[in-house]
Length: 251
Image 1 (cartoon, helix red, strand yellow):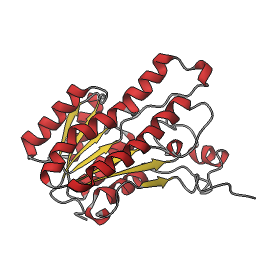
Image 2 (image 1 turned 90 degrees about the vertical axis):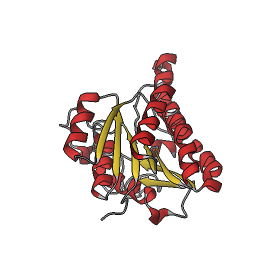
Image 3 (image 1 turned 180 degrees about the vertical axis):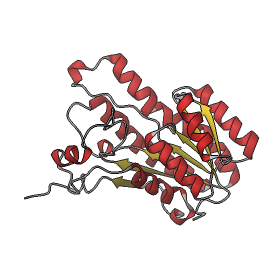
Image 4 (image 1 turned 30 degrees about the vertical axis):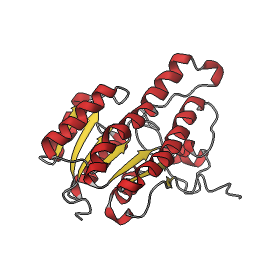
């Protein structure tokens, strides 16, 4: 416990799913969390349920002005930003011939522009304070290709590449930047109406563990990278995928 004691974290896409679970775990570890999302009603409810350690801001990650407002809030209220978890993302499933320019722009606007603007917004404060940790949530689809996910693949590979670039830029200032690559996780993205047998889906996908992952397992990876335990880790990529990207499991 208290692995993030006295730290201030911004977590995007925190109204539900992995972001919500991460916010709850960080708060349980002593962190003050600023949850952001476009889902205001849900986000406010999550922050209220966490308690005094949590605040919620409506935030469109694709807008630079929204990022400025979030950073201003954090610095104005708490005086620092120790951690940023770029979690907000969307998925678009379609063959390239059925993917419009608007579809691609929407995916890139949230999944790529969001983390990019977020890192740009927090780096000055982290650098001035002598350090910080940025955790970018990519995907197994940032480590390989998948049929029907060309736009999503492009965005998650971009997150992986940005992570390494900004890790180099932030190193001298003590700012660590790492990426987490979840596989099939039992959240709204995999199971929109909550009725699917996600373990069956995972088996059909050929995941060696034979089950879907849990959002708690992704949150734990983010916790480690955000904590001082990962003080010499930057530019790394951590797959949380039940050995899905390890290779082919032969019968």
